[in-house]
Image 1 (cartoon, rainbow, N blue to C red):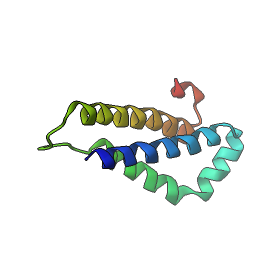
Image 2 (image 1 turned 45 degrees about the vertical axis):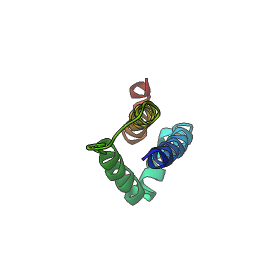
Image 3 (image 1 turned 180 degrees about the vertical axis):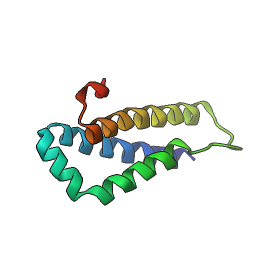
Image 4 (image 1 turned 135 degrees about the vertical axis):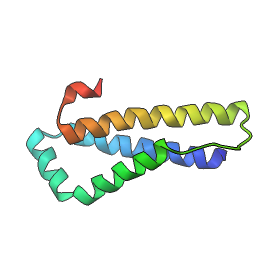
Length: 95
């Protein structure tokens, strides 16, 4: 369970890094990138939904695993904010 959570956290951070790079581009550049990578963005959105619905039902969680679960969900939440900002082009949403 811990390894899976660590892997998910690493994946989410990498996606977050990519989204932050996109935010450095102009709105027009982002719009072009989004049009060219529409399938990728749809897959990312679906992945985020799957991750946000990730359940730990029935798992025996020790304190370390529970803390890691909270970290993963926190990273996911931040990354969802970045994702929304990139998609909508509204930088005010990032905060």
